[in-house]
Structure formats: C-alpha cells, structure tokens
Amino acid sequence: MTEDAPAPLYSPRTVRDLMQRHGIRATKSLGQNFLVDGNVLRSIADAGGAASGVSVLEVGPGLGVLTREVAERGAHVVTLEKDERLRPVLAETLAGLDVEVVWGDALKFDYDRLPDGTRVIANLPYYISTALLSKFMASARIVSATVLVQREVAERLAAKPGEDAYGFMSALAALHGRVRIVRDVPKGAFIPAPDVTSSVVRLDFTGFEDSGQKPDARLIRLMEAALHHRRKTMRNNLRMAGFDAGAVEQALETVGLRADVRAEDVALRDMHRFAQALGVLA
Image 1: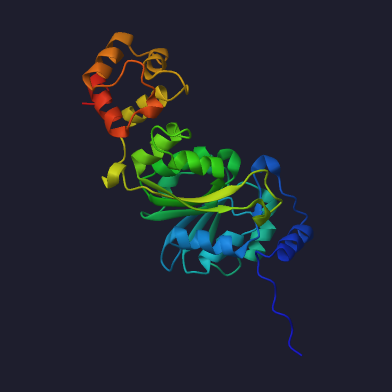
Image 2: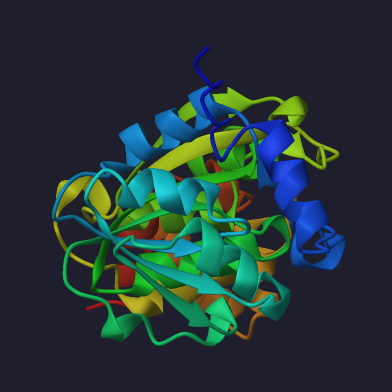
C-alpha cells in the first residue's frame, strides 16, 4: 500500500499544523492573512514573472507559502519580515531554497541594495500596502510589482481621471508606468479570512506612457497637493497648499482648464502642462 502524498504547504491542513506546532496566531495589527489557495498562489507567481535567474523581492512572507512557490521556480528571493515569531517557521518551510530572509521593518529597508531588474511578488500587509507601493515606485532597482492587496486599493491604482476611484495613488501609479488588475481573490483563500475581498494587481514601472523615465519629484508634490481634498477644486487645494491663487488661476487659463476644475478630472498630460504654466516645471 502506498502512502498518501504529503499535503502541499499552502493547504489549509498544513497551514493550521504549522501554526499549531509553532504556536503562531495571525496578528491583525501586522496584517497577517495566510494564503491557502494553490490556484491563487500560482497565478501571483505567474503574473509576477517568477522564473529561473529572476531577482524577486517579497514583503511579508508569513509562513513562506508564496516565497517557496517563487523560489522553487528558480528565482532568487529576498524577503522582508518583521515578525520575529516566524523565524523557526521560515527556517523549516524555506530550507534548502535560494532565499534571503531580512528581519526588520520593510518601510525602513534600503531598496538600493537590491539588484537591478528586481521584481516584487508579494502578499502585502494591507495596513502598509500604499506606503510600500510608493517605495517600490520610487526605487530605481525595481521594474515591476505584482502584489495582493485589498480590492479597493487595486481599483484606486488602476483608476483613470474622471473615475470615482481616481486619486493621488492612481496618478502616482500612472506616472510611474502601467497598472493591470490580474484577478480578484475571495476571502476564503486566506487563514484567517480578511474582512474584504482582495485583488492581485501588477504594476510595471516603465514611466509615464512607457517613457522609461521616473516622474519629476516636483510634479509628484504638485499632484499630491492638487488631489489632497477630494471634491474641492484644484485651485482651492493648491491655494491651501501655499500656492499663489492668482498664479494658479492664470496657469489654469493658459492650459485651457476651467477655474472650478477638480484635479481628479484632469488628464496627466494636462496636469504636466499646468505644472509648466505654473512654473513648477521648466
């Protein structure tokens, strides 16, 4: 009689056994929801381009389920983990794989230490997902990020000017490249189940309209100020941020925008022209 094959690492039975043997409870304050759906796991790795020789950054490996899937495809993985309780778990689940675990806060990590061409593939802690995405976009080392986030965040990232979900993160993502929502992920794909539906989203940092250039920091600051308060006019937002009201009105007129326009309705090309007319950009 043949023995049953061991359950895969992502199976609910294996995950519960790991948590029980190591005395682990998912910590809500750290955004811990462990993935237990093999189809979702493979779709993240596929969409992220995990393959032999690829450098991958992961944030929040948890029990190492996604980490192992990516490393077993031949990628070299650097994974950032803050929760020291997971040391013995990851020592077990990642044994023998090309994985470097860096213990500490991902928001304080030096992303310049990564090799050029790094791809992020991660189930991000939801409570810091937008802060992390901003860091990924800013890094010259990272070329793409395929991440599991709250569906609301994915929709904001992919939104276009004039759409309800459009805001500063939408503009920031578009200025850095392209965004594609890969798939939705139900609550039941995790232990414990989160309160919301999640989505896999891929961001390619190819520059605005594939220019290959990082956006000017001055334009980013202007966009952040212009979009700071939704439903307020761009003129009022910028005035509140310290810009001269007369100069703003003149720049709006110069580029053919209404005086009462809201920044969430302005195309990025027009915003760039406005920044030039205002003297923010040359």
